[in-house]
Length: 284
Image 1: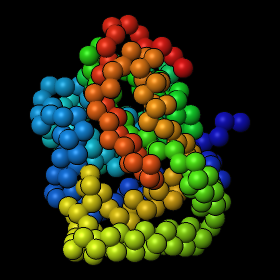
Image 2 (image 1 turned 120 degrees about the vertical axis):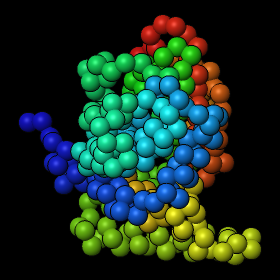
Image 3 (image 1 turned 60 degrees about the vertical axis):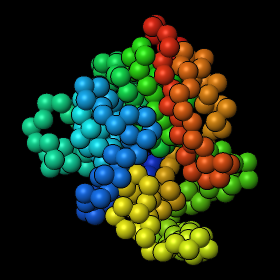
């Protein structure tokens, strides 16, 4: 019998990202949207996306689809999580009702039949998504196939840490198997530890530790609490080194345009690759 999304989330085999993002959208304001726009501009190295075809692969809350559309891109958004699809659709209806230049779909980065029904894009954007599919290398290969010749592949993937990655894996497995109260305790415990460390770092730098929790305080317009829940619960979970990602994409006809790593710490390494070849990307 084929297991459904509800089966997998109920069994702790898949985290409900979209349910978390619903809470985040209740706090969405103009400051967060502008932060999201700024992050897209910085990542892609351009301030105007007018006329570019952009695929938001794993749209999550829909915030970055919204940012790209406000910057002028022609956007296609999709996600496997039905709640994430609903979140993205709600932003489309709120800010761009009846807009034919923004399409929202439900689909999987591992579903080749679904992906083959899409066009190729000037930008394939997938921030913090492919490592949650259950097969990040197949998902990355599929994403690469959707980039038009000369187009950009903009991705962020969890950094591999020999010591901490197994610990994070164990934490996420425990979270998925725990009842609701247990999950809250795990998230609160992690939030207190990380929050205290960040506050201390801010104080040592002469900064207001509360400033980062304002609507424009966190990078990419995010929310500290929703980021914590996303991190401790995010499953499936895979990691990679920058070298692995570079070699994988280079073998598929891509050249590295920009790279920002987390310097060996926890978090996502950001990559922007440009497709050089004119043929079909090799499969994994």
